[in-house]
Image 1 (cartoon, rainbow, N blue to C red):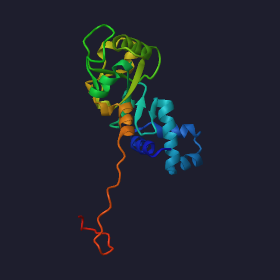
Image 2: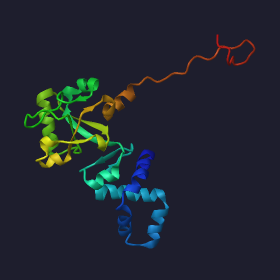
Image 3: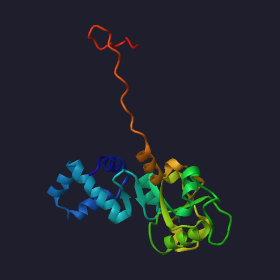
Image 4: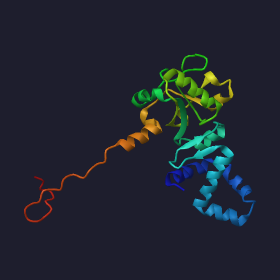
Length: 218
């Protein structure tokens, strides 16, 4: 398991109050297996990963970031202050503006009812009918084809999307006031690829005595 994923699981474990009872039941109350799992951190965290994914619909990604399906009270308690990933579905006609300015309220978002924008709309959904609808509306507004951005934020920054609280997809939607380019994973990764490789500087001047000239830079 990846080191960043392990670090996040270690942080989450004390807050996952239902994990140990689940583990006991999952191992059929077998005392020796339970003892082995509890005593072996790597094995225990493997089980914790499965518990979070299967029972709580919480995924700890290889990069250590957390995604989730629906924000219940116990979900929020388990995740705590860990960085999370949510998604913004738009069209690639807006990419240059997003790359330059980030995601801004009222610039690249629109409400299905034409209501004033509450901010930058994000969702925990990666696919499905609602996502296709977001992309179709964005294609009509911005041109190009549908595109998804992965946004890094924290639960404390998410606000409810009251414009869509009456529909099922609204249970997965939230609002952020603004998303900076560096908080969009795809832009962050692209910037890392483009970053120049630092080259070593020239060797220090020789001091004329065959030494390395340390402290005698000419």
